[in-house]
Image (cartoon, rainbow, N blue to C red; front, side, top):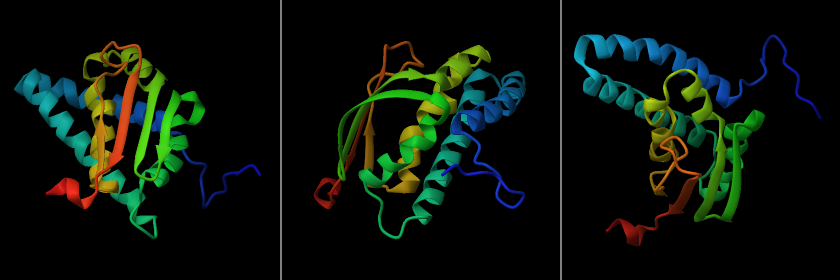
Length: 168
């Protein structure tokens, strides 16, 4: 069944397009911040603002669940970020307490680079990944050692769900 937009329920905007629109605005803000306060402060402000946005988004998604979300629930959300071919991924492991995959193509990185924002793309996108967990389920932990944004051949996402014994 194809979902069509009506005046009361517009079609969902793909995440890639949302991030492109946000980046257009944040680029202007970043440029003003650099001019007024220097690059270090500009990066800190943009990084903090995007982090806060990611945490808030995680909380919004958590509020839609009727239970504490696990990594299977999170995996069910991934099509939102993959919409319109935004990400190509190879899933390594998927379970309620572990989710591992490699991103082999990242159009988010590509659009930031096309916009002249490749040097801060990690602030606009990559750093969101771990921060989303804080709002969605603070027991979720992301380990990632490399990203396409920073020049690697792929991004290595390794999520796990910490149990209460891990938190002591």
